[in-house]
Amino acid sequence: MILKEKVFELKKKGFSYQAIALLFNVSRARIHQIYSGYKPNKNIKETVLARDNWKCQWGKACKGKFLYPKDLVIHHIDGNDRNNEMKNLITLCKKCHVAFHSGELNSNREYKKYICKRCNKEFTQKGYKKSATYCKKCLREKKKEKLLWAPKYKLNFCKICGKNDSEHYAKGICMRCFSKKRYSDPVYKLIHHRAVKNWVKNNPEKNRKIQLRAIKKYQKSHQYKIAQKNAVRYFKKMYGENWKIKMENESNYLVPADK
Image 1 (spheres, helix red, strand yellow):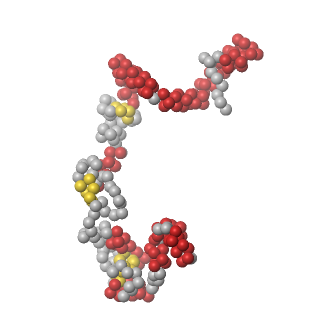
Image 2: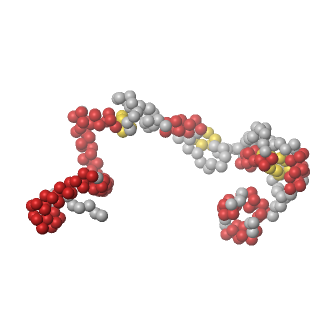
Image 3: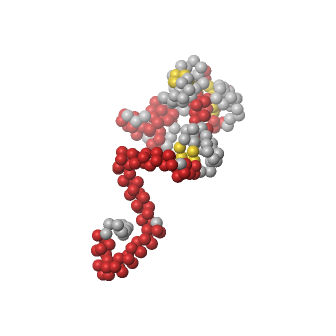
């Protein structure tokens, strides 16, 4: 049971109907009814439903489809919840009731106009959305492009090999073709080498992070463990009992991984 006192207290504190409804796990309309003092009459509801033959009287959203009695709702024509006269009441389905109050199917309502960022055409956005960036056509195209192999270039396969089994690298070229081009073409080798050098100069912090990540990955690998064992054997043979001190001083050799 929802206590009226708690609802009034929360409303005074500045909580909205929707927020209070989420706290009590009830619909927003029910909280509004409690706050306004509205008491639904079951006898009136049954008489109105029987009068309208248990059918939605508007039918713009549901399009006259068969509905269960649970889906039907009583609507006040003048918007006053306390005016329960028979002339003021009409049966609607839940879909039509929401559409009527939101103004989606009301032709007299004026909607805000927006300009699409993609096609630069004017369009109207219905419903509760405050702002819109793309029209319906552009949104559909954008969803289709996301499924492509290279959505930026609108390609579904590599330009060079014509396959899409490898990952896309850049400019419509797959990773396999890019690696071949990088090692085979001498001019591209120089360009790539200079670009990497410039990037390392301009981004020293990012480069350091990448190096640390690579070192951690190497320390977890099987190759590192074998190399570490070989280094230990070498220092034991060379220096005997003082091999640990010598190994720590030598910067060229491996340092034991942090546990």
